[in-house]
Image: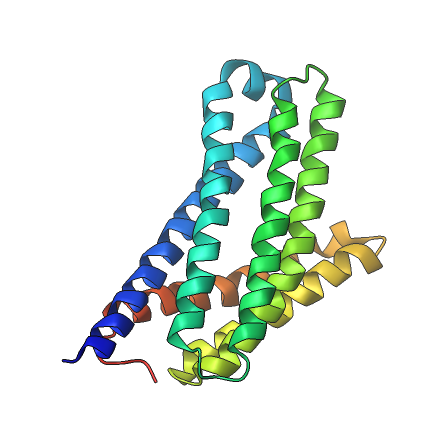
Length: 209
């Protein structure tokens, strides 16, 4: 095993672990913290402020490791013509996510439910815009990977769904009527594709070509 192969293996492990950190951090921050604030704004911020602060840190962790994943994947596939473009889209996504977290920080000093929900809506809108660019990253990543074919297909589908979902938010005045359908269309391919990619990166032993 030569030095270059070892380097590729190290980058694969870094990308895989970073993906898992992103996944679990985002699940905690979105489905526990944000969901709690939306259901009980004042109670959450007054009685569970530590959880909210941990949620903020969890979101920041997703931003940090998003950059790490972008870097690792660019190094792994630097020879591919689409690699740099894919990296730029992911970095745009990370930057927008980082900005969106400020809206949650502002909630810590608010005492009005209306204002809190307004800030959370602002966070969700900015986050949604970030996912639009993330969708292009996934489509390009699916083209770059090529194999395993099934993972590439799920990544491309997930990317398309992110773009379609963001567009639907802004184009459909009655989006809420179809929100549960869109959530499933985004969640299923993205969870399968990205988790499968993380596991594949961690399990793969030979050099990625």
